[in-house]
Each structure stands twice: as structure tokens, then as C-alpha cells.
Image (cartoon, rainbow, N blue to C red):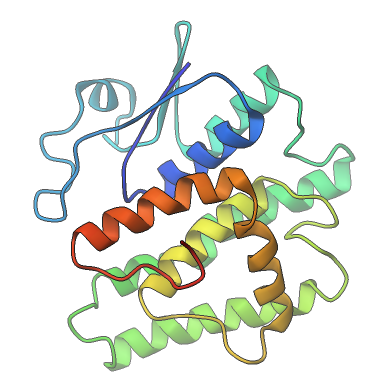
Length: 218
């Protein structure tokens, strides 16, 4: 098994954490990337497999999968233990929705902030940060009755949100004093060896480019 990711890819990091959590033998390769040229020229396997030309891409004995969520589904099939989706239908559906919401509802605010780094206190940036804080507020309320994003079991939903949150904090949208439960959740997630294994080199990459990673990581 081989995973093509990138040193600063949120979606690639999701797949890297999943592979590490599963403990499966997998060669993780970061394709060439710089802040100036980004992924150009793109890795030939990434271009060949993913019509969008984006990481992550997973190759496994003739099987070629792209998109972090689809990689989650593949890993759960071929490496069912330890399980990273809940077993029962209702909590599994909840976990899948929370993973989707992290990617498609929360992270678009972060993507917009990336394009607004030149004016971090402008109206547009403040509006995106307000959307991020509103999502934090929602999750804070949910954590009153659960330990993880989708219940009392760690899942892919937690992997998705810790990575999306990492980039939100990097761009100045951190937790506030009203997010004590979410802060405790963050401490539990970042203490996991698989998560730390991925966040540590990502932080090192940011520092090597003169940037400051979120202070909740090494």
C-alpha cells in the first residue's frame, strides 16, 4: 500500500492519520510542494488517478483511490480492525455526517480565509471567522452529551475535524473561553500517537517556511 500526500495538505493529513491509526503497512510519500509553486509540476500518479490532480491518492495492489473520505471507506473495508466508523447504523450515520460537515460546511470558511491572509481584519475575513466560531459553538453544545464528534467512540469524524481545525487556528480562528469542551476534545485527539505523528512534521514544515503552527501541537 502506498499513500501520496503533501506536507501541507489537510485532506492528505486525514488519510495519513487514518493509515497510522489502522497500523497498516503503508508507504507514505509527500509529493513535491512549495509555498511558491504549490504542487507544480504535479506528481504523475496524482494526475493520472485523480481528475482534480489533488492528493491524497492511495494505491494498493492495483486498486487506486482518491479523495480522503473514499480512502477512509476503503481502509475500513480492507483493514476493519481497529474500527474507525461506529458499528451501529445510527452512530455510523452520525459519524459520516460529521465527517462530511467538517469537510463541506466548516472547512470552506477556512479555505476562504486562506485567500484573505492579506487582510485578516477586513470584513470578509471577519465574516469567515464568525462562521468558524458559530461552528465551534455548535460542536461545543454537542460535546455536552458525547466525548467525540459522533458519540463516545473516536472515529473518522474526529480525524476530519482535528485537521480542519488545525488550519483554522493557523489562520487565526482559535477556540474561545466558551469552548471548554472542545478544548478538552482537542487535547484528547492531539495526544493520540497517530495524530501527533502527522501534525509534528506539518508543524516542522510551517516553521521551515518562517510560519508559526498552532500552539496546541509540537
